[in-house]
Amino acid sequence: MRRLARQRRRGEIPDTLLLVEHPPVITVGVEGDGGEAYPEGIPVYRVERGGKGTYHGPGQLVGYPIVDLDGRGRDVRRFVHDVEELVVEAVGGLGVPAGRVPGRRGVWVAGERKIASVGIAVEAWVAFHGFAVNVDLDLAPFRAFHPCGFDGAVMTSVARELGRPVSVAELRPGIESAWGRLFDRGSPVGPVSGTAAATGPLPAALPIP
Image (cartoon, rainbow, N blue to C red):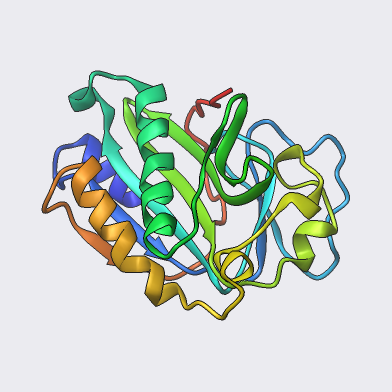
């Protein structure tokens, strides 16, 4: 992700979306954790995105849009809105009506259950990090701390909302379609592997209230 963000800043690649599944891991954004106690046995990494701590694991689709905001009017709020809309469209395509809650970042079902988290970083007007959609994963780790500052019980998944097993592969076409509509058509979408571990100096992050 960081390598591609550097390449995007140099104009060597177009806007790009990475889609991954992570092994169990907790990432903590620049707003910190306020001394949060996390579940034992799950690695914790501090990263440069906005927001607080959240959990990632198998059955969750994580997207890292690498996008040049200089070519999109340097409108960070609009970019975050479009990232949320991408998720809203994709889960809606599977039959889960979702939307936004004023003052609460991410994507919500019925204004009460959080189905996706959103957190970005911006350096030299290139955005990276992105979104995590709970497709069909074990939600128990969320209940062991306060993901994004909320009670972990607010977290839901596509599978829970639909009452049936749902594979990450089922959601991916909707994500790709929404990416093509909301961002540049023809921009690459690709899978990679690995955890969101922070290494080296961290770029400046831009939390979104």
